[in-house]
Image (cartoon, rainbow, N blue to C red; front, side):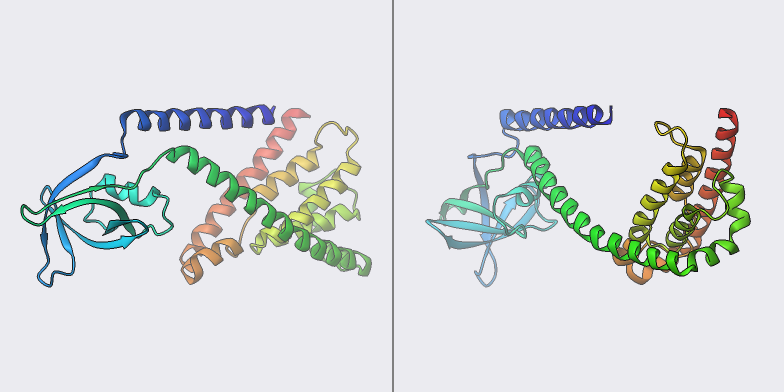
Length: 290
């Protein structure tokens, strides 16, 4: 069912993007191959010219590029909105300037004619670029998680064999017994759940992933109805999704740096409320199903 929904959303987005681009092509929104004529004046040192666009004065340099002269117009806030959009979507890799083709410049009456860079199929190009970016991100994420999963599953195996997991479980056994009454007293699933919750509390989301998968596998072994999620699996999923975080996620620290310290209290309060709500919601729902 989810595959059908995702396929439908992708098809709808492509159709809408194609319709938007066809409308732009029909109306020639970006003035492709349209000669623009403006008055101009020279700067005091004659190093560049100033294009007179309504009440604006837009600086431009004349340079020889490839087989024709070009107007190099800096892409800043002085440009009209349409010109800024063209600068952002032009085929040139340099998006800091608008490279217009110079047709003619007449010094006698101070007229200049030029053609802005052609822009086509913006929305479809954006979809294609997003697809390639997400594909690259997915590969990097999968490779990164492979190493993390191998490391943490290995450490968990060592902790399990040495008995460290069961020592840790003893400290939180009363809470785990209330949350997961179906799990036997010394079952390995309690250790996996404990380490998963600890990793989430410390903001180690990637480290918590392999531990959560392992916990779900162990809970499935205890599940008498394999085609349905057990009560313990539902409770664990609710806890894992809404986990309290005493430390901000590593990803957030990488993005915000030291500024993330300003969010510490809101993060703790928000995640505490979400965890309490998730636990009681799961308990109430499970009682309704009983």
